[in-house]
Length: 312
Image 1 (cartoon, one colour):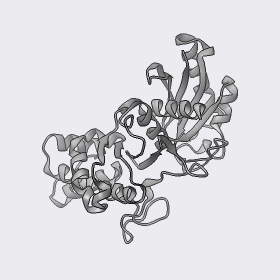
Image 2 (cartoon, one colour; image 1 turned 90 degrees about the horizontal axis):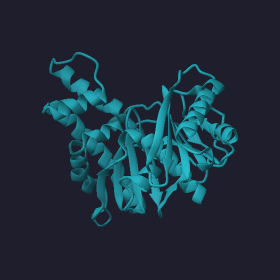
Image 3 (spheres, helix red, strand yellow; image 1 turned 180 degrees about the horizontal axis):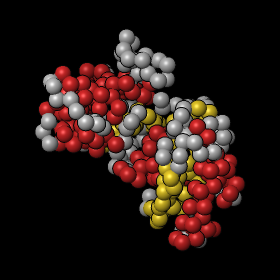
Image 4 (tube, one colour; image 1 turned 180 degrees about the vertical axis):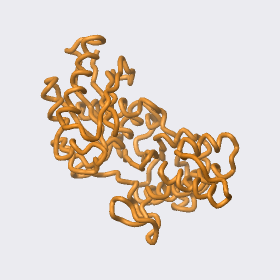
């Protein structure tokens, strides 16, 4: 049996799994992290955890490689995390890829977490039947990945897919990237929470902490303001998808990330508004789907991109 380790670095933990070529997770675990941890304080516990999973669940010789997903801009050759990782500052200008590859004497591959999500859906999820699609991850922020010709497109340096920072409103809100009117400011989980909170405030119903999950749960319960907020987010997502379709002529648009759990409450307004933002001939027969990997998307995505790059 051939396995890779899929490792998903988030702001507060790293999720680690052993994955076979069919996408089956043999074993998984998580390691807590703190923002102030040093590089070694982050990487060493992850290596120990992976070693423990191998000892308990697999022959170490079966490990073909290590796949790593992190936020930020990652040089595709060296695995160096150049920037965009404010929640894990110790990883900046360092290579987790090099450290874990040396620790386990196997090839290791680091990639942006949204590229990993696209690789995961291509190999094991909603993208299995497509060779050309765009994926948008809608969580606290917005990420994106492109699959063309059956492979994740990373660009010449590995930075492609920053869909969250497409300008959708030139005179709009300032973004933390320094630009104005970014898509992320209108359709991320953070934006969804802000829009719903504002709707409540204007009607004298403000109160309590509001997360994207709060909005989705309220919409499921029939709250018309929450439904409106999701529909508005869907329209912005349709605008981003339509612009990308006009440029690349893709088969499918896939939505993943926590907010995609809203299901048809989010997908329906995307489908309904998509024709307003792309040529009819280009939008015809394009599929709009939710990602299928859910809570294991980070592990499976990191593993999938490792399998893909090993084969390449």
